[in-house]
View 1: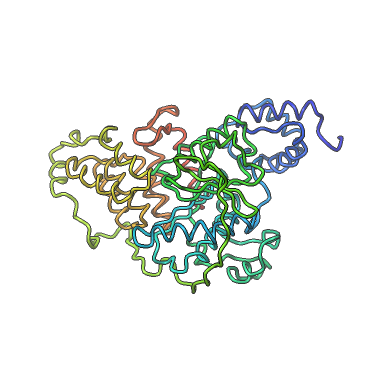
View 2: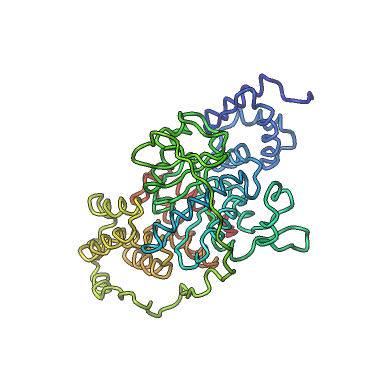
Length: 479
């Protein structure tokens, strides 16, 4: 066999890839494509990547197979502190500005690493936050890291890396935030690991922004070295969705090779020394904005991120401090077979304002609005579900759990409630309870057709949600 695959075969397989998963590989990138296909072939059980290419051309891929293929074709070499000038801008200007604007109000920061691969980027972001915000333990900080490959997400969550992940990164990073393992690897410090939440998400197919997958009201989004693989149309679609996921004046970072007015016309470019980033503004600046870096504040001392968190077991029957008890009328209603009186979902004109406020980052107002609606519609499970989503964004997990339990008390078949509660339990390390809720969700979803669009799920079909639940279980080592 020749050194490279025949051009005719590469042309066919690249065309198939573009039509099925919207990834674009022109002829000048066929060598790169062939190398990626070699690795993908092994995961699909092929020893010969040419045979794998022929199989791709002749076969139809299901969603899971398409995502595995996409994860191989979009993965790029990644390492800690990649493009250091961007991190300098983040530490010296962007984060300090956010701190100054919020230190006397709601101390809240939300960052999303979209297409996080093996985790070097989100952990770098967590380190940058710790360095730039000495009192970050007093803040409500979310660092969401998503990818389409559950196997890669599991690796990222472990937080163990070899020397290659530290190439071109500053010496202090490995010395201060990693410990050496017996196998000559480096493990991220527990306090940094706890700052990052890994989750399954397909940028090309899933719905965002949405409180359901915690992708709304972001302050900063990193999406680097991922979009360049997609077709132009898909890049524009993803760019618009990411734009909507940001709050006003939020920041959007792509790699230097992905900067494009054509792809991201809705953003305003902001110029830092040797770095360009995007910002979501109402009006694009008439001229370049140039920032000069300032000296970083001294590093804060390590602390246990969840040191004071109280964990409530699924089986616990104790009352949650400061939370109202379940309405006394519910048991009587259930006993009188009046379950049909309970609305299964909130009409758009009821829950719409809550979702809109949450997507804009106005969590206090969203929560207040939701609670007022609950007073008027006590038996509406969807409102309790929205309440739980907002509480979770505020890192009020115990209260979110209580709201989700009310959701499932009102409607035991509320699939999104089981999925959300499973995610919360997985985040708390309660894998057995998480598995139970995920399995409940799958059992309920099995009653629907693949193409059924689900209520209260931001347009997800039953088939797609089943795939997401299964991938989440795989990423969390529950299968």
